[in-house]
Amino acid sequence: MVGNLNHIIDQVVKDKGIDRDVLVDALESAVLSAANKKFRNTRDLEAHFNEEIGEVEVFEFVTVVDEVVDSYKEIDLEEAREVDPDVEVNDSLGMMLEAGSFSRIAAQTAKQVIIQKVREAEREGVYNEFKDRVGEIVNGIVRRYERGDLIVDLGRAEALLPNREQAPRENYRQSDRVRAYISEVKMSAKGPQIILSRTHPGLLIALFKSEVPEVSEGIVEIKNAVREPGSRAKIAVTSHDIDVDPVGACVGMRGSRVQNVVTELRGERIDIIPWTPDPARFACAALAPADVSRVYIDDDGKSMEIIVPDDQLSLAIGKKGQNVRLAAKLIGWKIDIKSESRAQEEELEDNATEAVEDVESQNDDVDSSADGALDNQSESTEEAELGKDED
Image 1 (cartoon, helix red, strand yellow):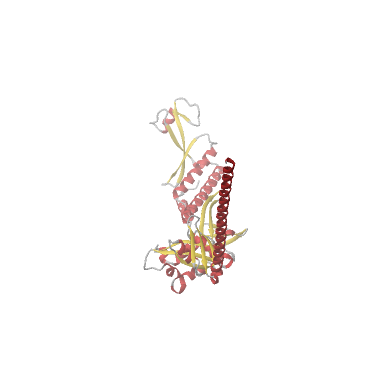
Image 2 (cartoon, helix red, strand yellow):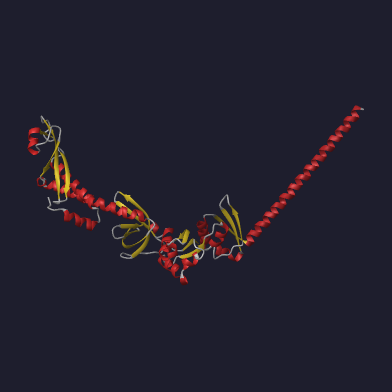
């Protein structure tokens, strides 16, 4: 076997970033596997790394008996006392074997076990490093495309940026730098899998944390964020300090802070909205820049009807319904938007319907009264006729 292994272990630990104890365990397991293969698993063996001499020592353990039945696992008392004069019957005696007696095939087995253990330790190290980093932004280099997915080099590991997590109209070439959000880290049969995203709302929040000190310090809180990647986004912010304007802090001097985020997101428009616990006021702010005339709320159904001036309707709805769709996601309520003229028409229709119903109701009452009078008259006539008959 190799002479002093200490310097080799130290070098591997430094290069691979593996814990020394893990590597020592791997060496012991490898040598033990080689020894068992050499002796065809007929003996009770143990392997221990000797730090002082830098070698893995293999010990064979046998039981001291008066009469040997299994020569591989038992030893005669007289023979045992040649090794240890104080040994007694039923004691377990350990004897060191010569590592050099292992065959070339056994040594190759040891090498394969070490390689496997090192690979497993590397995978475990990568997983442990990234599993607690979900929600962070990382910088990487695009290495290649695989069926539309991007393989991104993060240094110690490769990550996957799936096609579904890439923003529309964003194109990358090999060796391009990419900044992405770690959305998931999981262990698979092939090792740790790090999933990145450029469409996750968390990317927007993380970018503001990196650009706005008040957000990273917790003075300004981002309550919610919604996106239609590559097109438009909305974030709701509130301040825990009355002297700090949450919207102004996120915008920055002359819009510098928000502009840096917009640039990173390749021109995605961002609306920064002051958060309020009042859903009606929050909805009005979320529909900005459109003005709102009235809001009708259904608390049970978590829905609201919003009336806007006629000239503000298209602005409130947005291109292909984008503005109202994002506003509804941001506040978590269903939103139905109507113009003033449409609302008035519906009110007139409702009033007309109510009037018709009232008239019908009155007619029903008149008909009921007339039927009652006729019934009374009929009863009187019958009574009069009955009186005549009696006379």
